Length: 194
Image 1 (cartoon, rainbow, N blue to C red):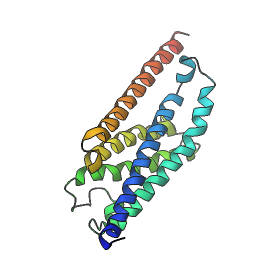
Image 2 (cartoon, rainbow, N blue to C red; image 1 turned 120 degrees about the vertical axis):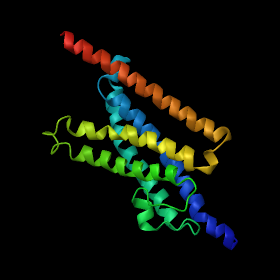
Image 3 (cartoon, helix red, strand yellow; image 1 turned 180 degrees about the vertical axis):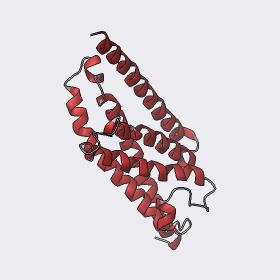
Image 4 (cartoon, rainbow, N blue to C red; image 1 turned 90 degrees about the horizontal axis):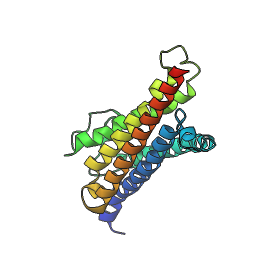
């Protein structure tokens, strides 16, 4: 292994962890959207809600772990040299030509941490209007930012079939989000009539 390939190793491993995080977090967002309200009951699979929730939580932790690995490995990138501040504080990376896209990754990391914490703090947030569920909805925003981050700063996703896959994922998320909104409205209007 040459010195040049060793220099690229943190970047390559970070990319792999980032793509893994992208895939896992997409599944987490989809399971979360489908588990909210009575979506599973509306599509005739009420027992699937418990299964979706059972997978949602451990996958969220897996996705967060992959994101932390992605960010941690960037610390060792000899070209980027971001430092701790550049990795964890939004809008502090100045070296990247795609820094605004990269910053969306930092913002999404913070939103994901807030989303996960909101679940564990749900009992103490019961007096807040909307409660933990309002904060937990930041997961959808985080998922959107992750996709934008991947499209804008991921060089391998800039063109060709990888970009098509990510755009397909974005379309799938939009469809699931639309389904969730449509079924949520039907449930709310049915409840108001009774």
